[in-house]
Amino acid sequence: MPAMTVLDMPLGVTGVMLPELDAAEQFALCRALGIARYSLRPRAIPSEAQDRPYSNRGRHKWNLTPGRLTRDAGQIRRQMLDAGVEPFGTVPATS
Image (cartoon, rainbow, N blue to C red; front, side):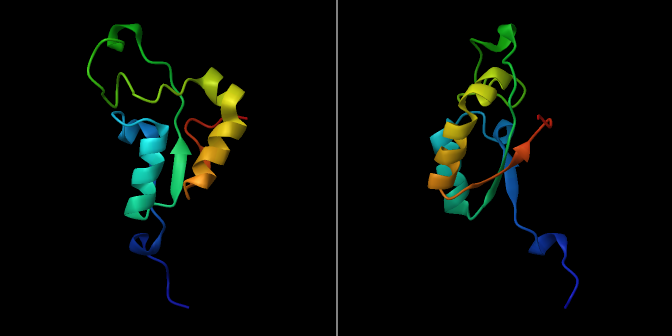
């Protein structure tokens, strides 16, 4: 069997890469592009970024806070699977 290269590996993304899209929009885009894996990236939006444009370091359309991930994990997982995207961990890691 030939060695696997980085080009053979399935691609994945995190939500901070797509700050201007909500969850459903992110999952649909991933699926349309053939991206099968998605790492959840919960974070609190800094108060100074609340009224600014969407940014990977500031405000996100999908406000996935650590508390929301904990509370809604099952629903988020189901939404991802229904969209054809595989949950692939969290960044940073959570238990």
